[in-house]
Image (cartoon, rainbow, N blue to C red; front, side):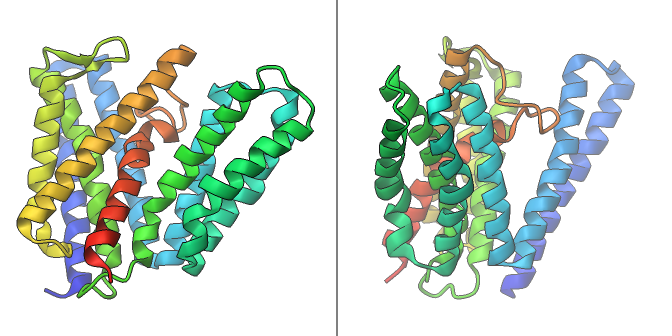
Length: 311
């Protein structure tokens, strides 16, 4: 099948799934009334329509548009993270560098294909620079804690997330010109895992995985969601450079890492005493609430693909 046709079929499948979800949500409202659970469900579906349209449009327009989209996503997620972890006046200049220099520069370097510099830019140079810049401000109160917050936010919201569009830069054996499908597959599997964990947890969930961190995350939801999403990833192996069993293994790995990312994000929210990182996305919370699973899964997936499928 033509690579572009495969991508169109994937997009069509996602739109069909959303259409079924929208119709189902409306039918449930008529049958059971517009209770809070159904209102939240329908709000989530409406938000998914917008998110799919934005992401699909960026992927269709090419690597530059995709890079710009992920730059914006990182900027918004980082803003939510920093807002949730209050800083002092002494951090303001360091934060200026984080938002308006380091973040766009990270994606610019990525877009140029300068892998050798991109891979170390934030974890080495930005990491050291931010500590130095904060020290020059002269505010030593809770210095280590404050600096770690800024560095952690930059690593998670920018560096880790940027590994997703970095998939477009890989020279994958026997897969030239098809990297957009791999990015689509990756995001689809990770996000479906989140949705399916929610569905399985709501229907069969009995045993919380980490009750003090996220009581709504259950073992039944975790296992059901991961296995279901892995099965879907395996069924879609033809759009990837993987064989069926490898596609299943890759899907299982990224869904497991996605769960870990969501759990860590929940721990941070519990520490700060909030339910969501923000309220930008109806029914979902903030941008960070939607991409927390990508933060952990994107770097692992990128390096697995690069190690096993590039020269």
